Length: 171
Image (cartoon, rainbow, N blue to C red; front, side, top):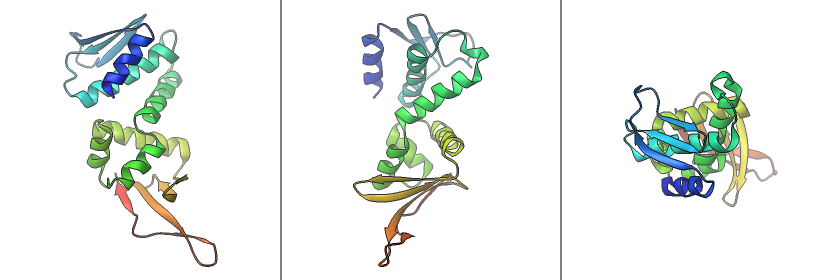
Protein backbone atom coordinates (compact mmCIF):
# COMPACT_ATOMS: atom_id res chain seq x y z
CA UNK A 1 0.00 0.00 0.00
CA UNK A 2 2.86 2.41 0.77
CA UNK A 3 4.23 1.89 -2.75
CA UNK A 4 0.76 2.59 -4.19
CA UNK A 5 0.62 5.87 -2.25
CA UNK A 6 4.06 6.82 -3.60
CA UNK A 7 2.89 6.05 -7.14
CA UNK A 8 -0.26 8.12 -6.60
CA UNK A 9 1.81 11.07 -5.37
CA UNK A 10 4.04 10.89 -8.45
CA UNK A 11 0.97 10.59 -10.72
CA UNK A 12 -0.32 13.87 -9.23
CA UNK A 13 3.01 15.60 -9.84
CA UNK A 14 4.12 15.55 -6.20
CA UNK A 15 7.64 14.96 -4.97
CA UNK A 16 8.02 12.80 -1.85
CA UNK A 17 11.09 13.25 0.33
CA UNK A 18 11.50 10.37 2.73
CA UNK A 19 13.58 10.70 5.89
CA UNK A 20 13.57 14.50 5.99
CA UNK A 21 15.53 15.82 9.02
CA UNK A 22 12.88 17.98 10.71
CA UNK A 23 14.24 19.83 13.74
CA UNK A 24 11.15 19.09 15.83
CA UNK A 25 10.36 15.45 16.68
CA UNK A 26 6.66 16.38 16.75
CA UNK A 27 6.59 16.94 12.98
CA UNK A 28 5.94 13.56 11.32
CA UNK A 29 5.16 14.87 7.84
CA UNK A 30 4.56 18.08 5.98
CA UNK A 31 3.03 19.08 2.66
CA UNK A 32 4.13 22.31 1.04
CA UNK A 33 3.36 23.26 -2.56
CA UNK A 34 4.15 20.15 -4.65
CA UNK A 35 6.35 18.45 -2.07
CA UNK A 36 5.61 15.99 0.72
CA UNK A 37 8.30 15.44 3.35
CA UNK A 38 8.24 12.52 5.77
CA UNK A 39 10.29 12.81 8.95
CA UNK A 40 13.43 10.73 9.39
CA UNK A 41 12.05 9.87 12.84
CA UNK A 42 9.20 7.86 11.30
CA UNK A 43 10.70 4.41 11.63
CA UNK A 44 8.03 1.83 10.78
CA UNK A 45 6.47 1.30 7.39
CA UNK A 46 3.03 1.27 9.04
CA UNK A 47 3.54 4.78 10.41
CA UNK A 48 5.17 5.94 7.16
CA UNK A 49 2.07 4.76 5.27
CA UNK A 50 -0.24 6.73 7.58
CA UNK A 51 1.88 9.89 7.34
CA UNK A 52 2.14 9.69 3.54
CA UNK A 53 -1.60 9.05 3.18
CA UNK A 54 -2.40 12.05 5.38
CA UNK A 55 -0.02 14.39 3.57
CA UNK A 56 -1.27 13.16 0.20
CA UNK A 57 -4.84 13.90 1.30
CA UNK A 58 -3.73 17.40 2.33
CA UNK A 59 -2.04 17.93 -1.03
CA UNK A 60 -5.09 16.82 -3.00
CA UNK A 61 -7.99 18.07 -0.85
CA UNK A 62 -6.78 20.99 1.28
CA UNK A 63 -5.81 24.54 0.54
CA UNK A 64 -4.34 27.41 2.50
CA UNK A 65 -3.08 27.20 6.06
CA UNK A 66 -4.96 24.28 7.56
CA UNK A 67 -3.37 24.89 10.97
CA UNK A 68 -6.04 27.55 11.48
CA UNK A 69 -8.88 25.26 10.37
CA UNK A 70 -9.50 22.28 12.69
CA UNK A 71 -12.53 21.23 10.63
CA UNK A 72 -10.35 20.80 7.54
CA UNK A 73 -7.90 18.70 9.56
CA UNK A 74 -10.80 16.55 10.86
CA UNK A 75 -12.13 15.99 7.31
CA UNK A 76 -8.67 14.94 6.13
CA UNK A 77 -8.32 12.55 9.09
CA UNK A 78 -11.73 11.05 8.30
CA UNK A 79 -10.64 10.54 4.67
CA UNK A 80 -7.52 8.64 5.68
CA UNK A 81 -9.43 6.54 8.23
CA UNK A 82 -11.85 5.57 5.44
CA UNK A 83 -9.06 4.93 2.97
CA UNK A 84 -6.77 2.88 5.19
CA UNK A 85 -9.44 1.11 7.30
CA UNK A 86 -13.12 1.86 6.53
CA UNK A 87 -16.23 0.16 7.88
CA UNK A 88 -16.07 -2.49 5.17
CA UNK A 89 -12.42 -3.02 6.05
CA UNK A 90 -13.32 -3.58 9.71
CA UNK A 91 -15.84 -6.18 8.61
CA UNK A 92 -13.34 -7.87 6.27
CA UNK A 93 -10.75 -7.99 9.05
CA UNK A 94 -13.34 -9.46 11.43
CA UNK A 95 -14.28 -12.13 8.88
CA UNK A 96 -10.55 -12.85 8.45
CA UNK A 97 -10.36 -13.66 12.17
CA UNK A 98 -9.25 -10.39 13.79
CA UNK A 99 -10.58 -9.92 17.32
CA UNK A 100 -8.07 -7.82 19.27
CA UNK A 101 -6.98 -4.22 18.49
CA UNK A 102 -3.44 -5.30 17.65
CA UNK A 103 -4.80 -7.92 15.23
CA UNK A 104 -6.89 -5.32 13.39
CA UNK A 105 -3.90 -2.93 13.31
CA UNK A 106 -1.65 -5.68 11.97
CA UNK A 107 -4.27 -6.64 9.37
CA UNK A 108 -4.38 -3.05 8.07
CA UNK A 109 -0.64 -2.51 8.60
CA UNK A 110 -1.25 0.64 10.65
CA UNK A 111 -0.14 1.58 14.17
CA UNK A 112 -2.57 0.47 16.88
CA UNK A 113 -3.02 4.10 18.02
CA UNK A 114 -4.19 5.00 14.51
CA UNK A 115 -6.74 2.17 14.58
CA UNK A 116 -8.09 3.40 17.93
CA UNK A 117 -8.35 6.96 16.55
CA UNK A 118 -10.29 5.58 13.57
CA UNK A 119 -12.71 3.75 15.88
CA UNK A 120 -13.23 6.97 17.88
CA UNK A 121 -13.87 8.84 14.62
CA UNK A 122 -16.42 6.26 13.49
CA UNK A 123 -18.14 6.53 16.89
CA UNK A 124 -18.37 10.31 16.44
CA UNK A 125 -19.62 10.01 12.85
CA UNK A 126 -22.02 7.04 13.07
CA UNK A 127 -23.10 7.05 16.71
CA UNK A 128 -22.93 4.01 18.91
CA UNK A 129 -23.91 1.50 16.22
CA UNK A 130 -24.32 1.04 12.47
CA UNK A 131 -25.33 -1.84 10.23
CA UNK A 132 -23.41 -3.16 7.28
CA UNK A 133 -24.31 -5.77 4.66
CA UNK A 134 -22.01 -7.88 2.54
CA UNK A 135 -22.07 -11.26 0.80
CA UNK A 136 -21.45 -12.98 4.15
CA UNK A 137 -24.62 -11.48 5.64
CA UNK A 138 -25.76 -8.54 7.71
CA UNK A 139 -23.61 -7.26 10.57
CA UNK A 140 -23.96 -4.76 13.39
CA UNK A 141 -20.89 -2.72 14.24
CA UNK A 142 -21.11 -1.06 17.63
CA UNK A 143 -18.54 1.43 18.87
CA UNK A 144 -19.47 1.62 22.55
CA UNK A 145 -18.19 0.71 25.01
CA UNK A 146 -15.70 -0.99 22.65
CA UNK A 147 -15.62 -1.93 18.99
CA UNK A 148 -17.84 -4.95 18.55
CA UNK A 149 -18.90 -6.72 15.37
CA UNK A 150 -21.82 -9.11 15.38
CA UNK A 151 -23.62 -11.06 12.70
CA UNK A 152 -27.35 -10.33 12.49
CA UNK A 153 -29.43 -13.46 12.03
CA UNK A 154 -33.06 -13.93 11.09
CA UNK A 155 -35.40 -15.96 13.27
CA UNK A 156 -38.05 -18.26 11.85
CA UNK A 157 -40.59 -15.45 12.18
CA UNK A 158 -38.34 -13.22 10.04
CA UNK A 159 -37.26 -10.94 12.86
CA UNK A 160 -33.63 -9.99 13.30
CA UNK A 161 -31.63 -11.57 16.07
CA UNK A 162 -28.02 -11.13 17.03
CA UNK A 163 -25.73 -14.12 16.51
CA UNK A 164 -23.58 -14.79 19.55
CA UNK A 165 -20.85 -16.79 17.80
CA UNK A 166 -19.71 -13.88 15.65
CA UNK A 167 -18.79 -11.49 18.47
CA UNK A 168 -15.60 -9.47 18.52
CA UNK A 169 -14.61 -6.97 21.17
CA UNK A 170 -11.89 -4.42 20.59
CA UNK A 171 -10.88 -1.37 22.60
